[in-house]
Image 1 (cartoon, rainbow, N blue to C red):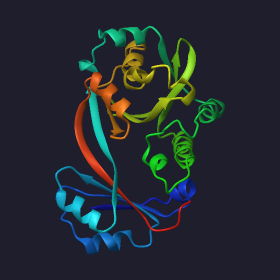
Image 2: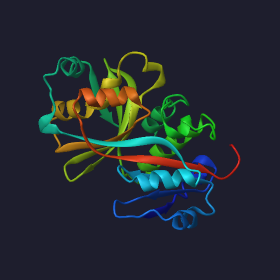
Image 3: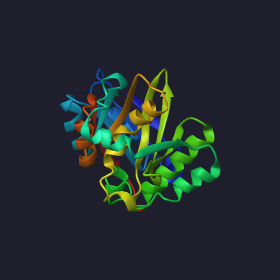
Length: 248
């Protein structure tokens, strides 16, 4: 069992937050859970599949299931570049790596409160609707300043419509965050999020081994898109939460 004091969330959410990751070899111990989460305002516990003793036990301790995180991957060599919709997309989309503060601000200024409407923070009535937006903006800026991630602008027919954020790791591309700006979400551009990394890799002759990313069970459209692109499900984790203070 790994316990993390998420000190950065004080700035994002105005609360002390802990996140606990359960391992397959862990056994449920209510005293250990209570002791590890004591003093934290917002408690998050992530549980692998097939550990019902945690699911039941956490419910008895007042925790609520809010989503399932689905970890998925796709090898570059297995991507179907001849798919009908993919072939259409490759003619219209592009991505550009940002390098300046002005380019970063251009992205951040286009992120709106409703852009990530399936995010667990957004869906939680305990938090205000702009808490999710603030959390993502701070995360993106931190990654840019620390140079720990690659941030890109996404284009459709040369019009900027979204962004992506990933890390390169030993030939793999780890998808951290991305999406279509709210103003373009009714234009059927969701497929871009799933395939733009592959298409840009092919266009600029920068292939990789595979892409790893994670999606939420609350985001049914993206689950459907990654299923269409035949991403492989690697693992899933239930996410339980508990609040110990007033609504903010």
